[in-house]
Image (cartoon, rainbow, N blue to C red):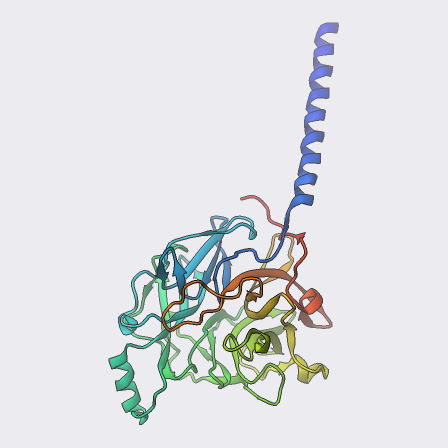
Length: 376
């Protein structure tokens, strides 16, 4: 019996050692899990980040040059939100109403049931644009016509198939930057967008999410105001509900024309008890000089046009684009788009006295703990 007992002792000791080593290794891995901005060092403006049932995170972005060509809607995926890999153009076939243009930006994607819905901005075909202008009594206008579009797919990587008609069109950049939101309190579906020096607006969507609800109307939420810092122009709406409040993140000011030192683009916030407002900005509610929660630093210019997500520890994060002063411009330029290079960053989103904040109020530059995620 002694040899048998001795063998069991050795086996038990070996198992314990292995478990201890594994535990220590896990702790070491946890300590080593970190990130440094940017998390995706390629031109990737206006990022929306979502988590899919398969455990992948997908990020979607404005059109851009990829591999010598152009992706109508860019996309990348990641398991850990730190290391990202590109996927193919998720909307390879252009909408019929925008087949002759190359202007697609600010995609917003959500999984509803078994379908992925993508809302985006697009430029109207020249012949349709001229017809639209005549109907609006603006035949002599030199402004472009831009529209809100919607596309669907059964998979996060696409292909997303756009609807035959746009949701809404208008002169200049008024109908841009859509963001869909399902109100968890009422189940109603909304679309936020704007603005081209006009207000950010919201309107209720129909049950099919492919059109606006019959009888609904657009409601103005936050207005552009040149007398208020960062609000000469407002755009890039993103809405979350927390603690009975609806928080409207939006970005404003110039992005991204002119000398880099003159670009003042920043991300701001307002809140309301209802998804349709009225919204009160951080500035108006607290007396602060402005409503910015994220502004430029010496290295990072024009941080903004954000989305948010939550990790498995319940920590909220913000994903956004910014221009790196060390490499601010694209080597090639997409026709009709800006030549600045906007890469994707993430940072922790914290809360204080009922308002969100980003530690330091600027993009992080140091190595920081990465989002906490369970393996799936």
